[in-house]
Image (tube, one colour):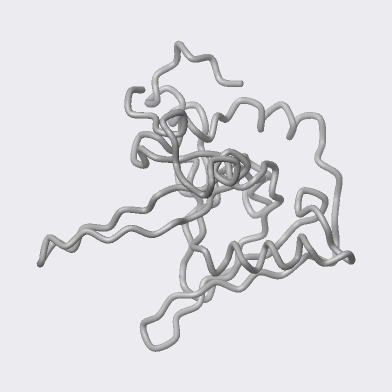
Length: 174
C-alpha cells in the first residue's frame, strides 16, 4: 500500500501515466488495452450544470489497471455503468471469467452526441510480471480518487451495505 505520510500531490507526481497522471483518458474512436488489476470500485459521480446550477448524480465504476498501451503503467480506469455491465458480462461468461486473467480493449464511441463504450476481451494474454505487481501495490485507488470524488468504496463493501455508500466509504480529508 501507499505510504500514508505522502500527500496526494506526491502520489500524483510519483506515478506518471499515459496522460501525465493516474487516470486514463479516452478519445472518441480510440481504443485502450488494459489489464484489470483490482476489484471494481463504485463512486458517486456528481455533475453540476454550469448554466442552470442543477446537480445530477450517477454511479460510476473504477478499477486499478495496467495500461498496456503505456508500458503497462498502473492507471485508474473510470467507466459508466453501461461499460461496467459489459465487463460484468465477460466476467460471468465461463469462457472468460475474472478479467484480471486477461487483457481487455475499451473503445469510446459517440453516436449522435451520446457517448458509450465498447469492451472486448483480448485474444492474446500475458501474465502480470513481478515488477508490474510491485508497481500496482504502490497505487492506493481510494487515496488517488478521493481528491475529486469524496464518496468511493469497493463494490464488495457497497453491496454488503445494501447498495448504499456508508460512513467508511466517504473520505473527505486527505
